[in-house]
Figure (tube, rainbow, N blue to C red):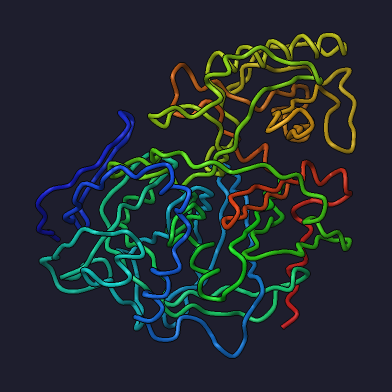
Length: 473
């Protein structure tokens, strides 16, 4: 298929691969917005009203859920976190890789995409405006999902491999379970849920059996934004990743309660810290002036065993080019630290471990710092090893990482520190990876730009795999 286009202004890191066998659209350069405009990034009521008024029924009107829920699984081969929803008419279950900072839902439309309710977003439509898809293109092939004339498009991004391509913006039915916070309830549907079509090759590097990626990022058309708009509930969502490959974790859309067995509301007693917007996109391909859709927090210092670690604090802030700072990621399996931060933290961890009579042993890739299990006691929150604190807006607000989230058992005899060296001059200085998020509830409040986190749920004698997925339907 061939799309006519004139000019595409995209900025890509040197490690990025970008391919364009799908819609290639006319994207005018976007003017850089001011920091004030970024603070208003989610003040979108006008566009949402325009979109809803331009559309027929978006959501079932007979029942207004207060929250929605979907399961999350950990893929044993890739360590990616996957979820599933149902889409299309008739409804088809689709598996997706969960991408916390992803911009939107993208789906492979080349393979077996059949739906009587699929509609492309036409140029200059309210849908294109809402998605900030200002390009316009034609497809010189027979009309089908992903290939239509007079449509706008976006750039779906495989954030695991750093590959991006052009894709047609479209909408179709999406259905997910509602919840009262205790169990799943009846399924509810959004009849015109925006997503982007992608070619099959974009699935390379993703878990087997998935059809795309589910983006939960800070955009107008991410899953949290569209669900909140469709059902008029709070623009909040929460993730709770299971550490087990055999038991599901959970994502909630909407406010709590978020109740795990045995009747523990894990939304209570959260610790709160501001979310920050990186003014420069961290996507594989982006337009000039586009902000990042990922979630950043401000780490002011790091402690090991409650002792400060000397690091270059300049690296902990985001500079004018969008470099530095700390983000939270579900596509990175383990936390990644800039080289000098990695060196300082691991040296402190080794020293504190030695004082606890824990013996260092040879490295086991991809981990550089490993220990013998001898003399390592077991506790409710994992192996008894030095704690790691990410100190946030003040000394009394910190994210403490215990052994269950800091140590990986690589064999019967060896435990390794689940942190990898990100090298010199990475785009982001600290990337908090999936392993460190497991059995921690994280609530993202988009309206107030605030993160609530629980620290380890093991202290509360529950886990993220303890949501009761038995339906009350």
